[in-house]
Image (cartoon, rainbow, N blue to C red):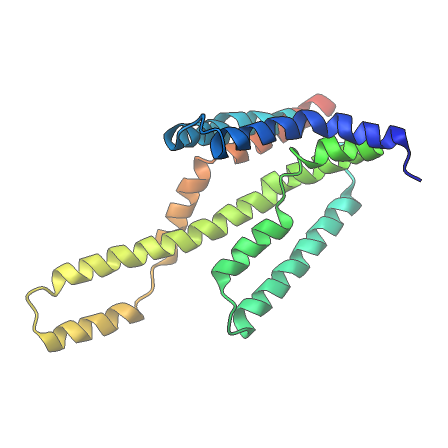
Amino acid sequence: MIGIKDIYNVISSTFPLYVPLFLGYGSVRWWKIFTPEQCIAINKLVAYFTLPFFTFEFASHVDPFAMNYQVIAADVLSKVIIVVILAFWAKCSSKGSYSWSITSFSLITLTNSLVVGVPMLHGMYGMMAEDLVVQLSVFQAIVWLTVLLFVLEVRKARSSVLSVMASSKDSQVVSVDVEKEAQGTESLSSEKPSICAILRVVFLKLAINPNSYASIVGVIWASLSNR
């Protein structure tokens, strides 16, 4: 049975988180304290500095040699099932699309558990639940977010390569007659961007992602300190 103390623990753990979130939302939505340009600057500060250091703080205190691999395996299995369902929906449904499948997978599975889950589960179940959330969050940051970023960059790189190919083809067929121009358009639609061109863009984007570095360096730090 849930008692008064349990409710107090949950409120005391989540109150310091949700009050700043509410004030930040209100300062932009209602009170107009921050301009859109300032919000963009704040978002970049959080994405490139605050969140990577926040992730490193939790990852560096995880013991990689005492992780609950059964929970991690269950998390992997659940995500694989969701991927199969979304892929089946994108391929077989008339309303399905791979772009919406990627977005749905991100919204369903890749929650911000460090910010929301840690204080809430710590108040409900104690340190044991907090340790499990941190382990899943570290695995998510290293594996799942990297996979998601890879998929997004593959889609983006493919679109950019196709646009570059289209512009180069247009410049080549300016002086060609209508019939040859139509043939060039058909050949353009049949061409595919090379895998090397896509992978090059993808790995360049991954190389400058600070969250991946924060998670990997945090796990290395934790491994050295707990060996």
